[in-house]
Image (cartoon, rainbow over all chains, first blue to last red):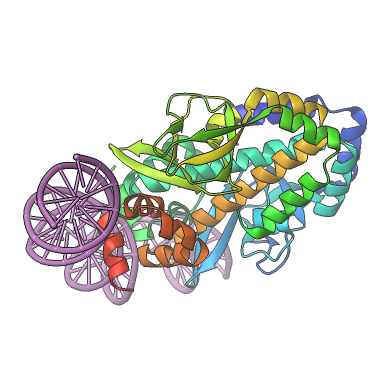
Length: 189
Length: 189
DNA sequence: AATATAATTTGACAAAGGTAAAATATGAAG
DNA sequence: CTTCATATTTTACCTTTGTCAAATTATATT
């Protein structure tokens, strides 16, 4: 999450009524996952959201027996399988811990119920959805306008922490490039 | 907009208070655009939303002097340049009428003000944003998992009205394929 | 119907990136 | 420090799609 949106969200949370915040904390739990653990598996409904406190998660699906990573989550990112969560239908995506990871877990139904009582939570939900749509729009734009080398350079510039901490196989699939092409790109920079 | 979401939105609107609906109508105006007219130009801030009553719009941007079409709008679709509208910053996209088109125009600021007073309008805004994110996710999924031929077939299956009513140059850029490749794909089906 | 203009198709070639297999590097476990 | 497993790089070749130019077809206007 870029600073601009993180600030918006922190500002919003800072403005929450005590009672809203207390209710939210009431339905949330800290959980710890070990490297390799699955937080969500395909075919299950994503009925939890995971706020990363520290560590790294990734979201991926299988296509032609290969893993395609769709998102990496670091501290202060919110991990869900969006369509599964929104429509409460089985997920095609997995969410997995890439390192030992501490998260704050909130149940979908509990959050929906709480939203009905606390308009400020609606604002938070809206802001997060809005940000996800902006992020996706940017991703589509890059896929349309940049070749493999440019996409790698963009990632290097905008998200160096990903390149430093994640395996190339996963970065390659995230960028929609083969592992071999990514390796060649890196050799020529 | 697929039936599933259109039903959700119509259901929501049907449940609106009389007063909410009246206020919304108060800040909306019917407008008519001729084929080729621009509803939004790049570098301007998208401070209006356009609900298509009939006709066809498209949204596009320039990249390396070529037009890349990002979306087509038919009856009951809502046309905005999303990031420009949300962040109220200059748009890189144009919105143009592909045919003579009747739209219902709502001003951004008026709508934001009205939302503060009418929670049901927040729900509407949320539903539309949510749907846009789902649509973008599906678009990214197709770009990652389908080749040019498959993407064309998917469009043919899911949005035949686009292929029937829009020029191939625009469809090609929409699918991220060259016009020539699209022409060859069509010749082999 | 004739003409101009725009849209689409076709051909020849080039570039980008993918695939498969082998070689090398890295890192964890004993 | 050695070994095994995993991650990454490299090589050779192949496939898909793009580019440019030209030809053809369709559409609109006089």
